[in-house]
Length: 317
Figure 1 (cartoon, rainbow, N blue to C red):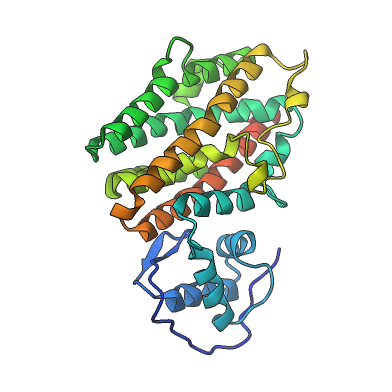
Figure 2: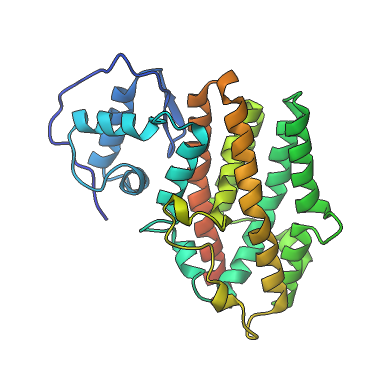
């Protein structure tokens, strides 16, 4: 593990900054223009060897030792839209953190078929989908834009009720049943802490944020399974198609994966296009904060899929 170590303690305040500053780990917001306090916060955490803050810095900002002045500049650069808009900003950061040179551990696990990983996926993802429809409904309740409402209604229908085909949640439960895990058992399961913490934050974002912030927080997550991210720098696909497309893999697994795989590119890009369209009417920095807050817990939630799979393999579930 790399640790960010401050070399000097010079203070520089860039009064021209117009961004909000948020700690995605603690979910603490700082005042406008206050990248100094944000840098102080992370340096304090690094000095105390607090692992969660250090790991986030390593994944998103830098793996090398920098001083406070440099860290402020790195945070400014991290938030900079580069005149490209919020859609490009989200895609760039998501790809780098989840499917780039150092992908999320779950993505690495999905490069080969492992029944326990898929079982863990089935159990924990059930709780994700329950929150997903709540988030979509929160968006609908907070906007009068009919195109936004229709988009989210279609999302909810696809996930929970189906649209001339099985709903995603039904495909998920059928996948679990093919492994011998009953839907009744899943429904009575208590989600793992990382999943529970993620759901809590997503619920808070839906309750407190504006509709466009909730969309940025939730629909950016669909980039995890987007098939067309190679031009954006993705090195890994969500899963290795060849590894899952063989007779040793239950048909229910392929049905579940392919249904989401066929829809998440259109869903994620469609949502980001809508966010981009209306972004000039809202505070873009609030969308950035919502994205960062959401993807931090999403990273931990994906780890919960692995943890549940290991529990199942070790007969602890």
